[in-house]
Image (cartoon, rainbow, N blue to C red; front, side, top):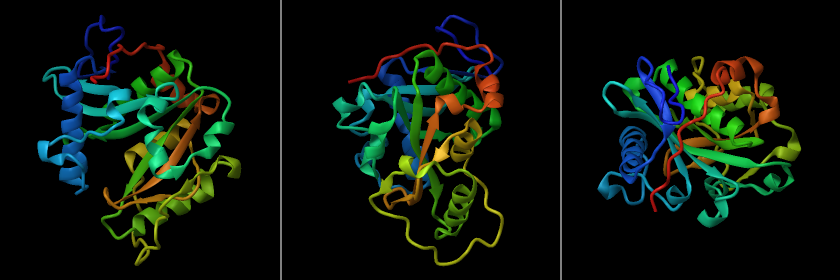
Length: 260
């Protein structure tokens, strides 16, 4: 795993993380998103006729990418929308699913990540860790106090797994009540209980490893056939073990611009 610093250091053995710098790179992330969300998860995506997942938020976001050094292929991505730029986009993406009034009570700068995905053939610990290294580096180097976003749980099993995971979150990883958000469409009850031990989705697991908390009940995203959990990380609560892992060399991720 390696992080590209200011675009100047040589690549590591396999992966590098940086912000997209061209419109073509952003389009490549939108193709990957469509491949995962529509092709793999069966999501109903507006504008999908061109094979791209894009929306009103993209022009106001910075798009963080992980490339395989040898092939140059983008294998993972997420997008970052900061509190400073969210008003231009009409608010945060999460505000379409949750009442985010509690954000006004947070003291400090906030940033949202969203549309996070990893190509199925690259879902290894190295790729996910590289992506999170870029996210964590951005938080620290740019002085953000809170990170939040929606972590999705697949509902293709009828919701049994999602409810089992939500039980774990309620028991061990729930934020205080004053930080809870209200889902506009609550997740309905499952038809049955999970029979086997359920696997925590990688994004949700990464949030929890960093020290993030779930902020209440899940939103039922019918278009994407998933349950979205609003996750909040107070940077002052960043797990020291994972802070060392992600930020051992305090890298600065190469900057890029969003295409308008």
